[in-house]
Each structure stands twice: as structure tokens, then as C-alpha cells.
Length: 222
Image (tube, rainbow, N blue to C red):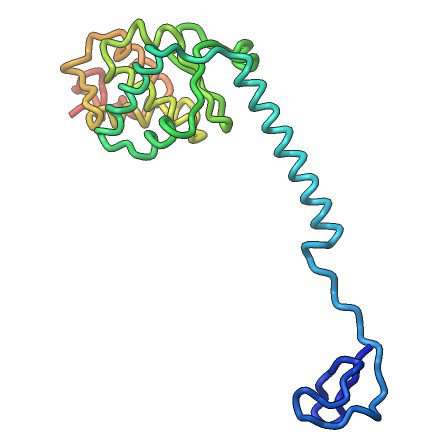
């Protein structure tokens, strides 16, 4: 119940005897029933239901994420140190976005989780689960690269997948940025990793290999 001032039209409390704005006499003014204030959006049924649905989705995603983590083994101490050295090289070369992903947001595993086990490619160096930011590092990652710089090139590739890139985009990005990384044909042209990555890049991004007269028809070769 409220009282509306007949002088200035301000709505006052029902027990008020004078208007709080103009001081007019409200003793003889009849009270009126005020309309219910609209319910806050944050208390509305729509918001409550939407919030409950969102919470259910987040809980389900977290549970799925945890099953991926617990179904695979962690990297050993020496393996993790090797990965850290490769990330340090990327940091030194200015790949800041990839370094933040690899250093702070990625969970590393040494064996396949239940999801990867059914889709793993042979002779893979690593695999990622996007958008859960889980990376599995396979034994080939430690065995075949010539050094930590080549391992950095592999991590640079996998970091693109952590961002949501497909295989073509990931191979193309690494191949275009290999000079910046210091991964050059002069130093690594005969390595297993170099030849493998060049072959895969040519198959997936053939537009980079259309320059006749250059080594391997590679338009990115300086």
C-alpha cells in the first residue's frame, strides 16, 4: 500500500503523514495498492532453468575431461623435462601464444586415453584432444627428432590443434614458420622429421609447392 501526494505526485509509504519531496499533508490522503515490482531477471524461471542446464553441461564436460586424464599415464620426469626444453625454444623464438597454451593450459600424457586409442595414427609423434587441451606424447617424439629444436617444431604443430586448427592448417603454419624457428633445410634437410613433415605438408598444402626451379618446388624456401 502507498500514498500518492496530490501536490507533486510522488508515491510515499502508506504510513507517511507528509510528502518526503514537497512536505505536503498526507494525513487525509487515501492509500492505494501499488503494482507488484517486476520479478528480477535473475530470479526468473527462465534464468533458473538456463543456469541449471548450463551447470549440467559443465559438469558433464568436466567428467568427460577427467575420464580422458585418468585413462592415460602421465609423462615421466625426464620426458617432461624434454618437453619443457622444446617449449623453451619456442619461447625464445617468440611463439608467445603457443607457449602459453603449451606451458599453462596443456595436460600431457604418455599413453593414449580411451578416446585416442581407437583413432591413433601409426608413426605419430603426438596427438591432441581439442578443446580439452590434452596432448599425448608418443615414444617417437623422443626417438626420431634430431634434437630439441625438431621437437619444438612438433609441438608447434600440435599447438595449432590445441587452437582448433585442422591438419592442413597445422602443417602449413609450421612449414611457413620453420625459418623463424631456425628449422632449416641446410641444418635438418636429411632428418627423418624434416622429410616426413615436408612430405605431409606437400600432400595437404600443395599450393606451397608450385614454384618450379626451387628445391622440391617449395615456394617458401628462401
